[in-house]
Image (cartoon, rainbow, N blue to C red; front, top):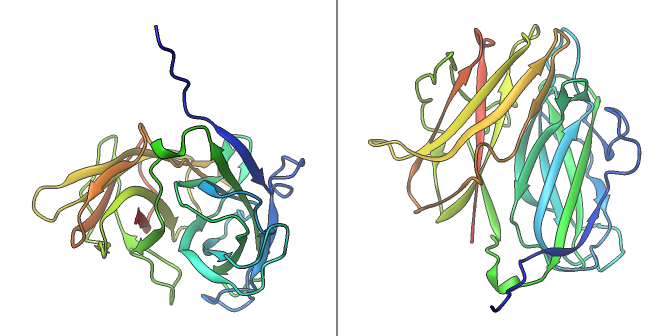
Length: 288
């Protein structure tokens, strides 16, 4: 019998570090001190040594008891930095990743994203954060890049990401009301895909300073008339009464679904108990 080896990533690099605490993971990325305004560009990784075929992102360290820490983060790249060199000429690779009271603590595992996004060797990676409040409070931002696949010809990767539903002027997304013990109604449209997309990620926010301990499952769907689910049962939750939130990246299965340009995008959710008030969402569609 002919044995065909599987596909594996044989290289990875990250800035997670060795201190696995809420305030110790990754790199501190501060706000600007001005509400709804991006802070300084902050380096996360020097120019990577290999081509990147996927990037994992995790936020922690920005929860606030009885406070609203609704933030969005631009993932920045400098493709011309060169291997091992710091970035200096930044551009936005993924705009406005939602970072809502993220925590790595008992019961919370940070807020996570994963994109099969191709970045060439030598690309430096950074981030810039804005908060809904006039604060310079920082989030901890972690990234991990994967490369050197055993069989690169079998991997599908994208080259661009569209952000749908983000309003930077108020650091918010599109309103959605989760159902209690059942999926609620779909939101209004978050926007329309501007290119053919096939990988989906979700960001979740809340305008609630007394978030209740709860668990949620979220769906992303497309098509105004007949909703087609493209990512299903993405987990999100709040721990205790100290506004510490977590989010997973994948849901019940990889969020991969081919969608043509020009489709409207929607979200819905179910909560295990009565949901928090004023929840909203942002969607990220990868293509190319």
